[in-house]
Length: 305
Image (cartoon, rainbow, N blue to C red; front, side, top):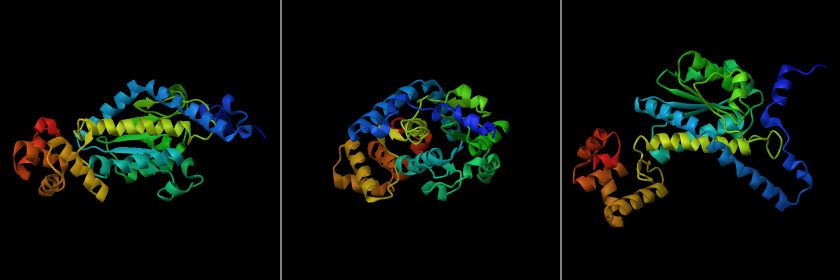
């Protein structure tokens, strides 16, 4: 039987090559296995560092669309899809963003978050359908995530958006030239080259780590540029649990110098919003006036002060 084109394509991917450092992995001691994995992981941030110019373009793109009320969609399959969902789900509690603002789409739907859905990633049409269901527009941004750069589900979605002038970002851990040769069309390519995995083809390892690092930067930098922090302190967090309530009080205390009870009262008067509380305290204004000052300052507390 002749080798299929798909077999040839996959076999040539950098993510599918054998790592010479781990050829005798099954003969290593526990300590040797751990040290090997750790040493390989150390190379990941360096790979991400090389694509900082592309990440910068992506952050500026996302930020500009956020400012105009646009949304960011992540789309992926398997590990890549789960990473997008994790990053999206952490934005509201961390930055007080609307859950609609950053969303994750995974091949196979919600079930695929917890268990592999075999074959879900193999259809380009399914990717296009998933995007259409979100009513994506040119005011939004689609970020495709695929370690191999070839996942059909992601390819269908990102090519559809690119062809319809919807801004696109493609994250992969194989060279940009390889991703382009696989037929992926995107406005920005972010491709940290992490090399072969410790366990051949297990892209949940170095590839997954690289993708997670990039996603962290994309949303964090974009949110900071929206005024979601005071210096390096989270001040737009949602007080959805006891821990976050206490963190908010601690934040107000550390910035204003007031005591615990005063911080609790100030936050209550501010409707639980740290930003509002800070402006109320320093500008000696009402909640309504504080909200207006923050709005005028584009969301930045320091500008409002």
